[in-house]
Amino acid sequence: MMRRPFIAANWKMNKTTSETQDFLSGFITAVKDVTDVDIVIAPPFTSLSIAAEKLKGTGIILAAQDVFCEEKGAYTGEVSPVMLVDIGCNYVIIGHSERRQYFHETDETVNKKIKAAKKVGLKIIFCIGESLEEREAGKTFDVLQRQIDKGLYETDTEDIVIAYEPIWAIGTGKTATPEQAQEAHAYIRERQKILYGNKGNEIRILYGGSVTPENIDSLMACKDVDGALVGGASLKVDSFVRIVKFKKG
Ligand code: PGA
Image (cartoon, rainbow, N blue to C red):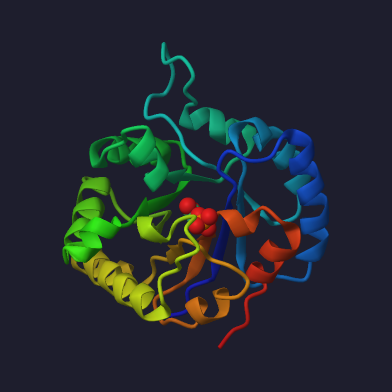
C-alpha cells in the first residue's frame, strides 16, 4: 500500500502576518521541486488570509489549527467550518492535545468538530496521544482506542489523517523512538482496520512530538509512519524544508 507522505507545519500561536509572508516567500521557492509529498501549513487564524494568497497555485495546502462545531450564531470568538472553507483552507487540525489540555476539549467536542468540518468538505488532521502518566501506567493503547472510537463516533475515515502525538514528546525535545512510534502507529492502523476494514490501510498516520531535521528520516522509515505534524521545527524555513525533504530509507 503506497500512502502519499504528508508533512504538516503546526505553527501554534506564532507568526504575525508579515512573519508569515517572509516565511512563505523563502519556503515556497525552496520546496518547488518537491512533487511527491503533501505539504501543509497551519498558521494562526489571523494569518490564514495572507497565507492563502501566497500559496495560490503552489500546491501547498492550507490548514487551520482549530474550528468550532456550529455553523454560525452567537459564539463570541469562535470560527465556523464554512468560514475556513471561505478563506481557502483545505484541512483543519482537530483535537490537538493543547486544545484538550488548556481549553478543556473532550472526545465528545472533538467528535462534534470532526462532523461539522466534514459537512462542509473540510479535511481533518485528527490528533490523539497519551500522556506520560498514561504511558507509564501501561494505558497507551486503551487511551488511543478511546480517543479513536469516541472521536470518530458515527463518522468515517474519509478525508481524515490521524496524527499520533504522545503528549510527553510535544515541545519537550523528547521524541518517541522509531520503535515507540511504529508500535503506536501499528496499533492505530489495526484499530482502523477493525472499524473500517480495508480502508484502514489507506489512512495516513502522522507522527508528532519534537520532530526535527535530525530525526525525521528514521521516523519516516517506519512502516506505518506516513508523515509528520511539526511544531517548533516548522517555524524556521531551513529546518522545515529539510523535514519536507526527508530522505527515504
Ligand atoms: P513540537 O509540536 O514539534 O513542537 O513538539 C508538535 C505538535 O504539537 O503538533
